[in-house]
Structure formats: structure tokens, C-alpha cells
Length: 358
Image 1 (tube, helix red, strand yellow):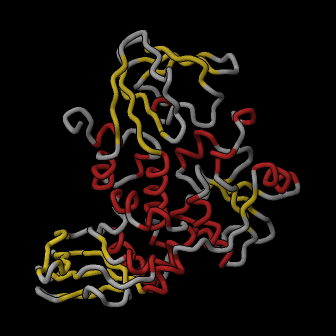
Image 2 (tube, rainbow, N blue to C red; image 1 turned 180 degrees about the horizontal axis):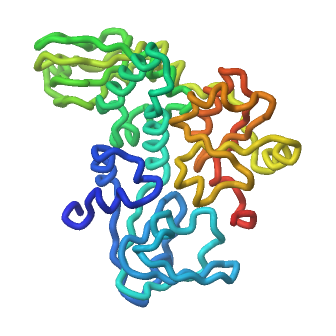
């Protein structure tokens, strides 16, 4: 796939264009590129549900259920955005030329955007103490703990987004040495670990002999099983080089995996609140906002939400929204801590009925 698709293709798509080159390379592993012959319907028998699908080559005719027909070209502005998002159902489609479509899982993409947008913001307006804290946060983000693979497979795939900030504050950084035993088989579960640098080996005692179960490297995580199941450690982890580990205490790990108390409202409830004076608050990237914002919404991207504290009026209630509800939950938690009245559109724009989408 890498011979056909590279990060330059991804960098032209929204909201993927916000990713750093290293993040784009991670996403490559989770993208699927398919070629459709001229005259074929690329969506016949294949749902768009749960995926962001982009036209990256050729011309495609799309017929919508409301009777609207459009021709999309891969080099057009519309092709930079996912097909069918916040639009009526597609009744039929036809490849006018040989086309290529790029598919990526919606949930993984949204997780990656949430972590990146939450953590990278304008530091120029922040006090020095906050800038120092942000330096630590960026170190953690670059560690591999929040790589696409770990967001997809590790416990952080289920971390409530409103808890991201507290998670980053509570992680400890520890230096470790070659041959140091980090976890003892049969011991109590006390920490969840990520290897920032160095190598480690996982072993288990079988028939009086230590059997090697796995070799761990930078970016790998371990230790969650005993925390989640509240059981003894089932293996030993020993460093095979000097290195640096990031760790999270059991209490913090379990606490942060729980959804915080945020007030979520349905789309019907949100519309009533807006009619009574609340303001839609779109926390996505500006290109996403311009593409399909809700009526009269204001745009404060999640990565700039801290700087908006004090600038936004506290006299106005807000309904925060994003694509899925993940980014808006993180933004709402920050604003609520600062004394704002803010609710979250449950499940984001994905929750809006097709009949009401523009």
C-alpha cells in the first residue's frame, strides 16, 4: 500500500491535514485504498457507516435520496472532505472514470484528532508555568503512548476524552536500568506502564523455567491486566537496556477510565436550548467548521479552548459539538471547570437525523 499511498495524499484531506508528518505515517497503516472500475457503483452492497471515505482519484457521480445529483472530481475542494457526511443518504453512485477511494475507520480517526487537537494549542498566550507543563505534555504525546496503535488497541481506546487533561497531569516519568525488574510475577498490580525509551522482556515461570513471552520496545504498554481484573501480576517484566518509563498509578488508571459527570443532551434537546438563547460551540478544526457548521455556530477549536477561557461570555450557555462528541466532551470539561454553563451534544454531528442534515 505504501507504494501507492503516501502522506502527501493524506495531507490534502480534511481534517487529516492537521496531523504532523509522523502522525500521517501512523495513519497510513490504518488506511485502505481501493480501485473501482469505470461504470461501477462503489457503494453497492457496501455501507459508509463507521468510515470516512475520500475520493482520491478520478470522477464519481453521486445520486442522493433527496433527488440531488452531483459529480465529484478528485482534485475538487469537495473531495477533500469525507463522502456522505452530514448529507442525505446516497441512493446510487457511478464511477465516471476509473477511481480510487480511501477508507479509514471513523472512530480511530476521531480519537487521533481528539488527542492531537486537545494537546497542541497556541502557547504564546499561556503563562510560563503553563508552557512548562505543555512541554511535558508534548513529551508524553511523542512517547508513543498515544500512537494510532495504542489508541486502537490499548485501554486508552476507551478513555473518556474529558479525562485526557488529568491523565497527562498524573503520569510519572521514571528512569530505569538494564536488568531492573519492573513487574514481578505474582506481585500486586500497582502501575500501568509505557516504554518511552529502551527495551524490556516479558517472562513467565513454566515448569520451573522462565519462558520468554514477549519482547517490548519503545511505545509498547504493559501492566493493565492486573489493574483491570484486580488480580496478581501474571508475568515478570525485566528491562533489557537502560531506558525511561511512563507510569500511571492503579488508582488513577481506574478513576480516569470512568466517564466524568458531563451534561449531555440529545439533538432535539439541544435545538430547544439554542432556541432559548444557547449558542452552538463548534470545537473542530476550522476547515471542518466551514464545511458543515450548524446554524449560527461559533468556532473555538479544542486546541484553542484554554485561550478562550475569559474571552467567551459566561452569560451565554453553550452547546459544544464536534463530529462524534469526543472532542466536545474534552472542551466542555475545560470550560465547565472555568465556570461556564456548557452542555455536550451527545454523539456529536453523527447523531443528527438524515432528514435534518444539510
